[in-house]
Image (cartoon, rainbow, N blue to C red):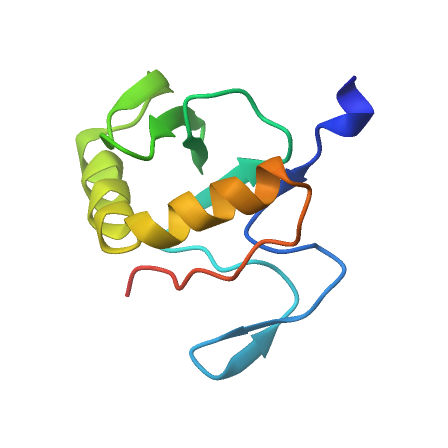
Length: 109
């Protein structure tokens, strides 16, 4: 079952990414925060957050922490970013559940 559930940080790692007109080798991050979705993940729709040693799972619809912990500063940045991209997150969740490539979502600037 573990092989069927692979992670994607809003695109397939082997591809190159364009962020704000610049090409890069890895998915965008903002302020050291890494956001990812898992293919074939369980409901409710959510995304995973890593920041230094902190980890959390955040619900897409309510933007509340379902599991884990983030510092208030990191959580504030994540919620600001996610609220601006909520529809894109929902679409990427749908794509991930269908094992389709995810669309790039711009980082917080």
